[in-house]
Image 1 (tube, rainbow, N blue to C red):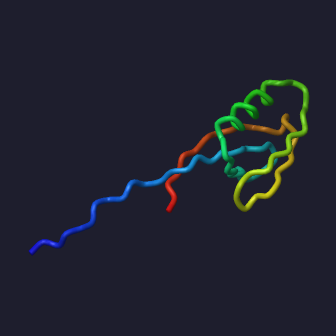
Image 2: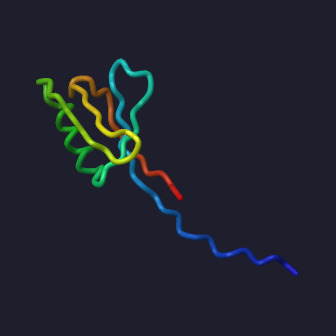
Amino acid sequence: MAQQFPPPQPQQTRTALVLFLKGSATPVVLYFENPQAVYAELKQLMKSPNPVLVEKEPIGPVRKLCFVSTQIAGLILQEEPYV
């Protein structure tokens, strides 16, 4: 008799904001309640020629992050599965 496997459970995903800073060897992965809004805000700051001090309080292991907007090399939103 063939073994019956349970039906696959729907996989939950969360969206992370990955921040690439100039002078940093690794990207910073941040989690927010609304990552799309933070992404749009930081993207707007990247376009500005004037340096702005940015301070964010993400969810997760990073409690507070502070950097100057001119140091942003790139941004991405990444969806990842989690249990």
